[in-house]
Image (cartoon, rainbow, N blue to C red):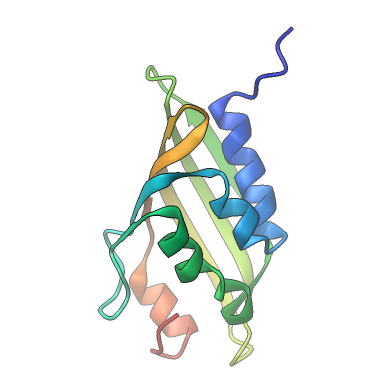
Length: 138
């Protein structure tokens, strides 16, 4: 039996790091040249982030903005392409600044290269995001 993780297991590890608010650990799972896409990002938020360092800069303040306390649902799908994992997941928590509840559902497509996240494309509802943050950005 191999000690090598599957890409589904790698992505599960990423969720564990995210939930523990370890944004550095999460971005360390990414390739140096990772491309993260957020096609439905609201105005004022980036829809594409290129590079591990830039992604970390984007995510490092997330725990001070949104206190994610649980992942109520997580379903991962291995695909016919061993480097592609599709994930449906949700988060529940609180907006730190306002105390507003935060609940979001995501559909995420993750491509791995040599055991690292090469592309990360995440779909979510910007209206829910903006309402929880009282119209202010991340």
